[in-house]
Image 1 (cartoon, rainbow, N blue to C red):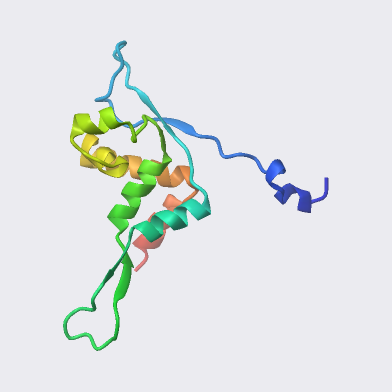
Image 2: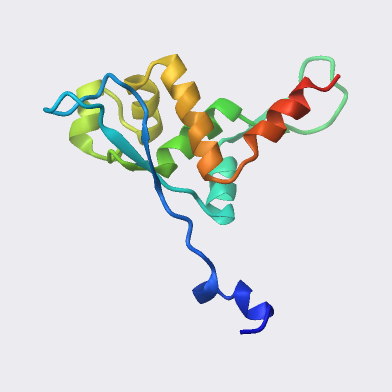
Length: 143
């Protein structure tokens, strides 16, 4: 196989979903915390999520720029990303959404998890998707 053939779809190593314990509050009949299944998204799917989390707003008062300002609502993006990457439990399940009184997978995730659980889960999801969280932390620490 040539080096170039390694890039062909049929030769690429598939990204495998991971199982994670998201919360010790969701336990099975055996008393053991339930595992969640988390899978990565493609670059194209990520772009779609970023587009969905982008909003347009008028410029701030006193700003002389013409037109609207576009910005990504990072909290919305993280919720959408985490929901899209969650393979189990099924966050699209109507009965599960109804039990928490919400109508969307990302709202369900943010409602069923505590703030700390969601933050930890969002970090794990980003790792599964290949984001370098250690590098981001180090970059944020720089003056």
